[in-house]
Length: 101
Image (cartoon, rainbow, N blue to C red; front, side, top):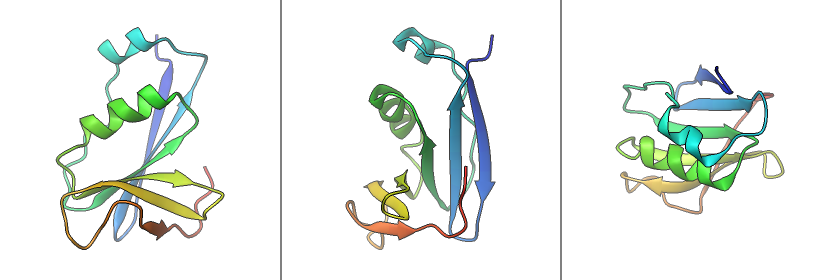
């Protein structure tokens, strides 16, 4: 039974991976989830309402990507939390235009 729905939206500079939970989840779900595969030189923005351990898992899963950021609607953008590129530094905010998931 699928409990996490993933949606992928690609822009010029990054890929947004948005997730929605169908119901509350338990940590053991990490043994069976399949986040979308992304083969890109772009960065990833994670978006969705979920537990911090799910965000930690997804950050580790996408670790080789150029950068990883988490979307914060209060900031109107995404905060970089990990980077393999000196042009993207942790703590910087990437403005995200016209994003409404």
